[in-house]
Image 1 (cartoon, rainbow, N blue to C red):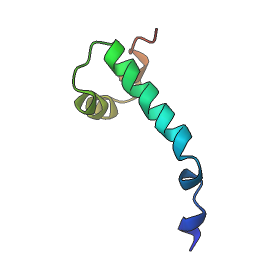
Image 2: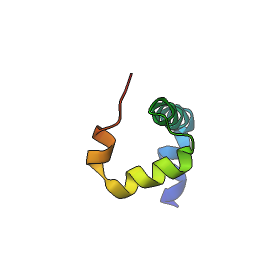
Image 3: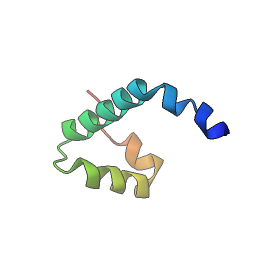
Length: 55
């Protein structure tokens, strides 16, 4: 099947780094619960992401 040829399965290390980087940004913004913050950012949309402080 075509799902076996997915690019995501070939680049797991890159996606893990991006996920870790995003979690570190949320922690730098004073967030204690990364899972909750990720959910809230997804609900509020792009404007909420743009308001995050990146060091």
